[in-house]
Image 1 (tube, rainbow, N blue to C red):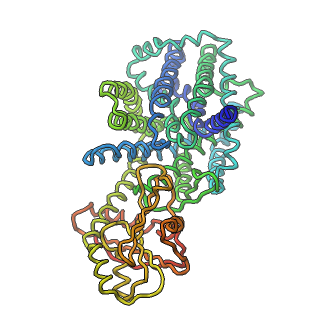
Image 2 (cartoon, helix red, strand yellow):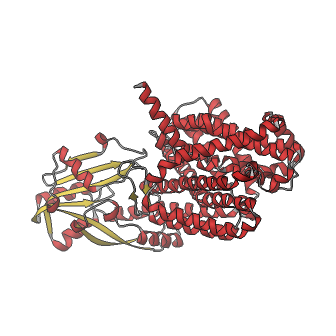
Image 3 (cartoon, rainbow, N blue to C red):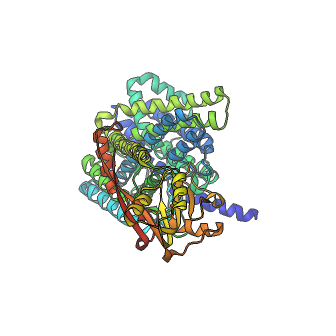
Length: 621
């Protein structure tokens, strides 16, 4: 058993290596180069050692201590990520403070989409630019090759990551091994570079360069891109494999590679043109370029999959319209594909690549989204540590202040990139934040208007049982979002058809603030009267609701269904923007447009289309 557990842990660690660390593992392609070339610095020994020291201690404090040692403890029933953290934090605080936590979490999630657009672009471009090191005449081919790789990557998404995922771990194992070996070769030749481990070099660099050093922090943060993935992917692998992979291979390999690049620059300052690829001898350049391209594709895949997962969570928690969700693997529930998100990302990535055209230009836009999300994670972590875990205030505040100072330094340094491309992820994040908050607020306003028109359910049921209309054979299932008022579809059916089925089931599907709901807590079945039943189905925000599964579960609670004798009634609202108090008119129109383009409830809840009756209702916001 112990041997089996070790084997399983090794397998999970290898898988985590492939999925979790792709983004941070490709950072050496461009980080040190951007630190030394983007801010007018010269490649003097003091500058090289100072920046290396900043990168090293940033990896230690932000990744090793903040994320690996602390944030990974904040799991929402085993799940991580900023939406899971938001749900965990708001679950334990008072109603008046929940909206602040929700807004923080939503904005952090919105910034992630900006990261999901820039990461594939900058990673693939930086790998393709290795061709210039191989032969400068290949320069014109960089952009077409990068575009072809990106288009191919997004075209393959609909087939799922199962088959490709089997290669992720071994490829990234080889990648990190190569990173370490290339770096170690140059460290051995120039061991003086190891002095950068001394934090004095970082403080000395910051002290002597002032504003220049502050600006350099905006590039140092490139070494940390992908740190949020450690937490976001915790639900797939668990915290232990992620920790083992980080301390056992990823951190040593990254440090050796960065220090190897520094050693190369100490002996050959002209190598600053591309210190990563110049680590390799000429004969190994082409294999290294191919391997780097594979690594950047894997890094991009991890971010794209994260966007799918985040979107599904937003849909289930009520912050996004319903969309088509395809499962690409029968065994792995986390492997999903959202066509709309996929094509929207592809268009955005191609626009970004064609606009910026080089990894250096894109690096100037990179960082705001990453550091903004990190800062929000720190804030939400304080709420969880203080409220959920009951940590003493001095401990929770002390840890938060330490991480917060680092996050604020990085975030403010990246804000200075605003007019050189940094506006891009910020604008993308703000647009997505606006869409999510508009959808949430619009749905709440819609439900409020529906409740205003709704009749009390209990008295309605009593009246129908006492004075029943004409009854017809079969079961009618009415999907409703409320537990109190009479569903509009039921009223319209009674009004126009003037009949009632022998058995009426009012079904409500709810999403809880947990990733998964246990099967024994899934269903609540209550008989309200001789012919009326109430069914409440609860799902987690990482689960896909299915009406057919709900019906199957009802049989165990003495409510059996014959599908061919069951009709499903849904209310299809036509929403009209008005001058009534609620939202601004332009936001109401935006909500109406989003509602029209949302996936039909029939498809989302997996209801047999040949058993569905939709009844229209007009609602004025």
